[in-house]
Length: 352
Image (cartoon, rainbow, N blue to C red; front, side, top):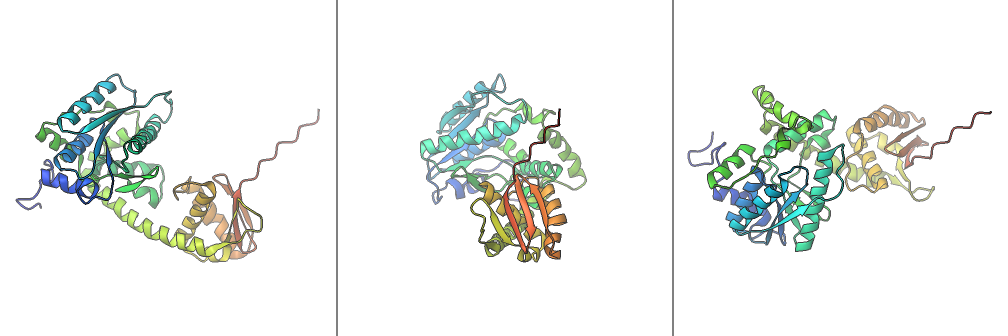
């Protein structure tokens, strides 16, 4: 139960509370040169903008609204954000997503375009930080979406409070705050906001899951508990990833076959716990493919091949050759070699 003088669990953020959430990012002792605030015009990002304006930022701020051009009223919504930003004393830029829009995976493409435009603006204005207004509810929805997609601990750890963004830093200062409190903040302060109809559009998976959250909460699976699960998995995943990075450095062996391949001590790999061995191979694969993250593509396939076939072969002194994510995993002679998948042979023409 909250103290009598403490913040209400459902009420608006007070000025001091809002400033406290943002202080590590944009306060007087912040380590960043400047920040771009991603503000769509919805209640969450509008609260982010308003709290930043009230909090006496110690670094330059620019408000950015990405107009995806997907709805007739999107330009007017961006203009509305610009008006409120000016009223709050903040600079504003509208960023347009131009060009053809894909028919499939539209939300994913829009998200990628949004982050690209925000990062480009940050570099243009000399900022090294982009802040978004993702909430506790967003975290819960993300965990549920990844659970449905079959993600492992890395995926179920949800959104991190901070991550790299194309050479910059992406921060999420409201990740522990329920959406209802940000709506209440806007209403209490008179900050006008809009509601994106795509948030309730059943065509999109996140919107369908959003309707389930109240039912899950009735059974005890609240947004807060899903967020706590994500935090615990993030903590455990960080420890396992550190162990895997250490093991990978110790297990790497010279490759007599030349560049483009990676050789691991197979016996040492097979002696590791399965959870660590899986991450070692995922890290090795990501390094060969030049990926920025260690999230393995098609985790279920990698688990099935590595844990069900490759590691047993190494432990028994046998051989095994399997392909996954465009790579060939070849076990034999006490080694595991990872390299590009060989080209498939063309079928022989049938005799006339």
